Structure formats: structure tokens, C-alpha cells
Image (cartoon, rainbow, N blue to C red):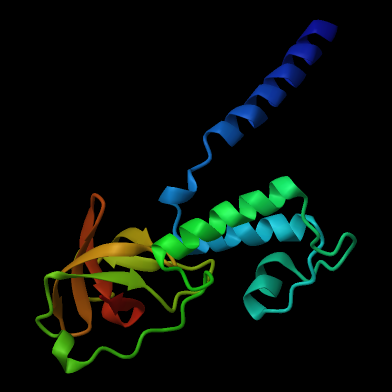
Length: 175
């Protein structure tokens, strides 16, 4: 009986350790995931958040040591900031894109980034250009490098990794 309890406890520690090893590297994270990882470090240390996004995500916090980071934590924040700069992130939440202009009709041959989506939300990828088509996938705030093939009205045909479908262009920033 004691041995089975000890085995279960050791297995639990092993699972916790394995989950940390399987975390995605910063180079593969979206802007929102990078923003979340950076601010989660501050949240653990009691930082007093004031922005609406941070308050909605982490709460006010505001307890000792009030966001003071150890050297190791500060280095980790610097690594995250490096990837945010490299990806062109603007702080996790990107303001909504302007309404699609007529020039987007027939647009193709470029790339886009997901903007204007709530931090915990997503942009549905559908089988066709409209909400009546089934959803086949999701894009998340800050996802970039989305290949845009063409647009029809307010909908664009895209490829993101292995995902190919249609998304509403009002949540894309073209570049």
C-alpha cells in the first residue's frame, strides 16, 4: 500500500516535470502567447496591473514583492521581449483592423496578421466565404505569416501551416 502511494507521488512529479519539457519554445509562440508568458512572470511576483487586458487576464494582483523580479526572471522576461520584437508584436492585443476596403477584393499574393480579436478569442477558419460554412480551424490573436491567396467580398482564402480555408478579412492586417 505504501509503495503504491509513493509510486503515484513519483509519477505525479514525473508528469509535472515532463509537462515543463514539452512547453513550446518562444520562437513558435504567437504574440498573445508571448504577452501572456511575459506578464505571467510579473503576476507571480505580485505586479500591480492597470491595463484592461492584464486586469481581465490576471486580476489586479498587487502584493509583495510588487513585481520585483529575480535576476533569472528578469533574464526570462528579456528573452520573451526579444521574441516579441522579432515577431513585431505590439503588446499582445492588437487593435482592430480597418474595415475591408474595396481594394481588398481580388487581393492575393500577400501575408496577414490576426488583429482585433479578444485575448482569449479566436478567428474561425471556414470551408467557404461566409458564416454559413463549417468551421475547420482557428487562428489566434497575433498569429502572423498567414498566406492570403485571394479575397472575395469581406472573406479571404488563406493558408496557415497545414490549415487552408476562409476567414473574415476585418480581423486581418495585410502586409
